[in-house]
Image (tube, rainbow, N blue to C red):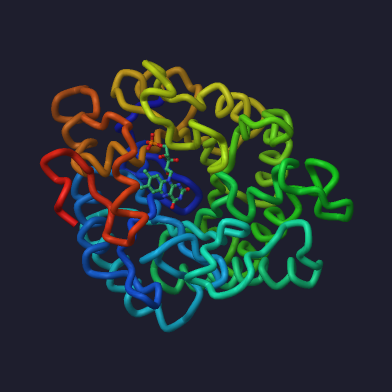
Length: 357
Ligand SMILES: Cc1cc2nc3c(=O)[nH]c(=O)nc-3n(C[C@H](O)[C@H](O)[C@H](O)COP(=O)(O)O)c2cc1C
């Protein structure tokens, strides 16, 4: 029976347990997209706190893909020395760290990028080749920075997700019109990374198990794409869901929208697990050790990823291990987005910490 605290491997990546810090945009970069000491300290806290694998906040692969203030970039070689300091520090504390690569597509912030956002329907095939190359180059750069792997952000409505989702993607050419065609850009990027960074270099994909939106990606189409990602060489899939544009819900559901409902994407994740043979990581609303244990021990998913509980308490994994269980103090009110959005650095916002930033 798989255990939460047993050591595992994802490709060349050996992990101390099955707990993953899901990508969380921290808003802790300088104006050039370079990580700050504050970010290095946060990752140190998470690694020391027992997190098996840290996934960075989404880093933009090109400047026109910026999603917000103080977002980290992976778009330029000048960033390598700063990231090397960060990854060395994480490794020194026995942490493992994967870099999430992203382009915000339609949701890029024009005020920051000073250019028109990319549109999935109007971008030319040449444009697709160029942006795909930007992802591949960024992955090779992340490898030079000392990251233990990369994760493609293909969830929640950002650029790669816009290709996967028929709600956004209305193309009639080789990149649209069928689930396989819509998955093509991600497939080509995975293959490109594997050919340039080496087949051993871990590539993860975060994707929606369903868009939960009328006309959006269905579970069946998501599973079809997942199989293609596995065939292209993906080493693990992190299953999320929802779109940033979905009213009320969204991938980080408030407790009020998911009352008493933890692990709200577990059905979609298990559906994909049944169709594929690579590790499946579940994210979304996991708050209790007992639920995490049941999901893993029953074999429904292979890894447990959390974001907001680790903002609340970076030492959560150690505490659960020491006490043999527990429940996160996170109440899923999403107040942690506020300091992040204004670029002040993410933290758990409570009445006591309201003015900390
Ligand atoms: C402040 C904040 C920033 C986030 N940034 C990212 C991100 O950069 N990339 C990503 O894939 N998801 C991001 N997410 C979504 C989380 O990774 C996760 O999918 C979602 O919050 C549900 O998990 P949770 O209930 O454990 O928080 C972010 C969430 C929060 C709260």
